[in-house]
Image 1 (cartoon, rainbow, N blue to C red):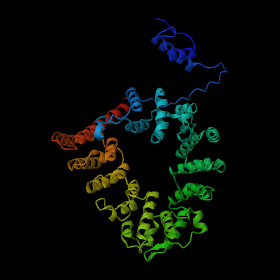
Image 2: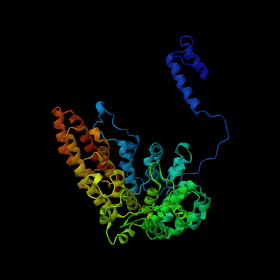
Image 3: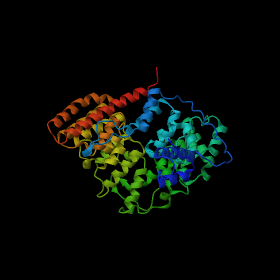
Image 4: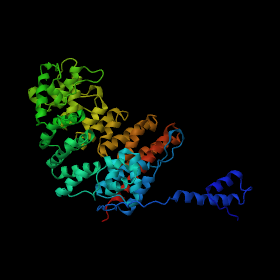
Length: 518
């Protein structure tokens, strides 16, 4: 076979004129073009060599077992099963939706990412922001090391946790000071969290050393990190932050202080709120004075809200919930909520109490505001908003949360349950899992199509206890019978239940692979 030699321009000329007019044949032309393409991509002009990067820091955490490593590679490369026509997704599990659970389980076991998979892990975190906290924690110091070398992964240097290998001991005062002064933002956030976990007051002392020179957006994120371990010892720092030049920082400081019922700000807000609301009625504030502004009250209301109602809501939201028992003659939350409020103010008051219960993590008030799950949402004592109810549920212990949502599903079905299900602990407790499966089966029997419940079905794949897979057999059989009988939605439901069962079995296998060897 004749060959074609020469530079790239000659090869292009041969391709344009035809190999018959130049010595050679088509196969030789393609072979020569392939060789030249590799040369062109690999070639560099002579230049002075740059400095080699420092070696990646060592990560002392153990690598996951071999089977789990193979599973992670599969999940990182996985794609959803090809969908069929008519809205079908098929019966294969969606691997991309299992990746967050793998990362969470690996984090609980204290594993590090396998070295060969760190680039793919960073690429997945770049594409999906929901993966970033867990993916960057797993990637650790080596992930940050790689992120410094690739501009596409720069997000890891701003928002990710610091690497385990790069973190000084919190008792090493010089190392902590050096990293705090010179480290990347992600490293400083991780350092602040580590110091906070070791000694809560140490975090605010560290923050105070550079607070005046930090950028506003960094001050806001540092302040937000104080939510973990928030205590009365943080009050002096937060009280000083009420005078910050950034409105967002002031608002966050006010919110954190109002979550401390014994703080001076909570006392000031209680005094203002109690002057406005009582058994005799509601009298909203007539102005937003300088003291209210300093304590975080926003003066200008959003469109469609009256000024006085807007100010009243902020005062009630920030007042300690404990102050209302004495104001209403010893009544508890349920009795206070049952009292008729002054005309036109019930909705404003109850909404503010809902926000206060979530902010102060008060389970008693949250339970009273939720009321009975079986009652129509509009008849509840607190709020008919599903989003607000989901926030209230997040305050309750997991068992009570699951019981309440299970009762809601049994009473109202799944059409409005998506947000409520999303705040329940994973895996769902048995009573909740059974209620969801029964509701899906009821929707099938009623002739609905599974894509009408695609959000709930996706949650079920991720959140049902894998032990429930066997309990799906009855619903699967009924769906299959419907399909055989020619029922319009039967085939779709059969696929949906088969996919759900297959996903649960895969999750069980995945979690067993992550278990440390005996």
